[in-house]
Length: 210
Image (cartoon, rainbow, N blue to C red; front, side, top):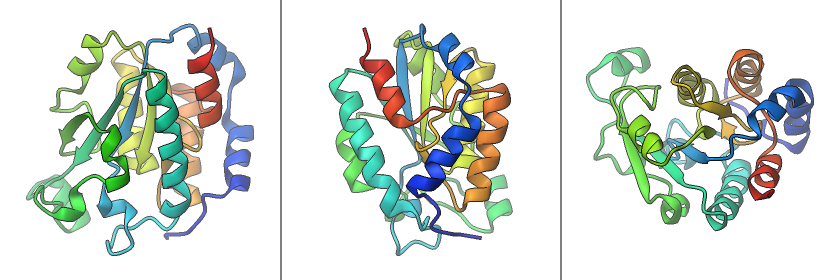
């Protein structure tokens, strides 16, 4: 089920297949944006973890570069950190993600960007958290979804953001999951009814434009 799929060829193919220019044009005027950095924890991004995503070594440098440029532009980056214990997530996945497990901390490389961290206990980063309040205080109109995993927490959070009235940008190369099939399924669904799916580089061009 897991594979190292996150190649330049895959990314270009997904952008070509699911990017909708007319919908992008509708969102572009709403430039008060924030980046959501979903669950960039050692649990998913380090080889010693059973949940390690094989494409993480390709993905992490790309996201670090993006966050560095976003920070220069003054765009807020809001991180989430997931943990759960003795709940529906435990029953579904057959195990806990305890808050005090070192693997459930953010990957060290992302710590310099993690000024704001929202703790969550399910796929939806809005459910039972202060995330919406943080975004409203910043007068955010558009959220840019990045992180892991594409088809679980990232997709669920993107849908919820749309329902709550935020424009949603879901870069094709801004999230990662276990395999190409899960990743593409998310892009297919979100691009139809919830989000625009440009490249991270196109998001930077938009954020940098006058």
